[in-house]
Amino acid sequence: MTHTTTSGFAHQRLDAFHAAMQLTIGVERIAASLPRGHADLKDQVRRAASATMRNTTEGANRWTARDKAARFVIAKGECAECDAALEMIERLELAPACDVAALRALADRVGAMLTGLIRRQRRASAS
Image 1 (tube, rainbow, N blue to C red):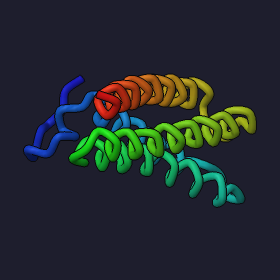
Image 2 (tube, rainbow, N blue to C red):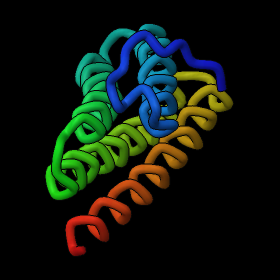
Image 3 (tube, rainbow, N blue to C red):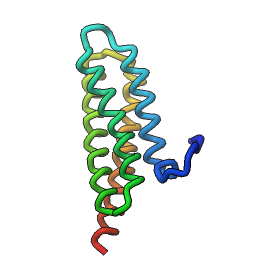
């Protein structure tokens, strides 16, 4: 994965951030192609993907392990919500199945990375 680091912020060093950014971009592309009549689903999947990326960013840049873990927990919940919305898009056949499946796999990967970050921060705050 190639990234352009444009700042010295901590989130730029997290693979979870870059994967969440990819998820957000992919969701934006899928959402733009959804047929009329699905504005609520389009809005929901876009907000959930964006919130995943934003909360991952916020968590990475918090000072304490407890604050970091709390933001990563929120990001993971948003990621799961994004996956559920993508599943709905998939089941309703509103977008190409292969495109949606790739985004769902990416959401799963982001969720797994966030789980690792949460565990690491909880161990650090317990020490």
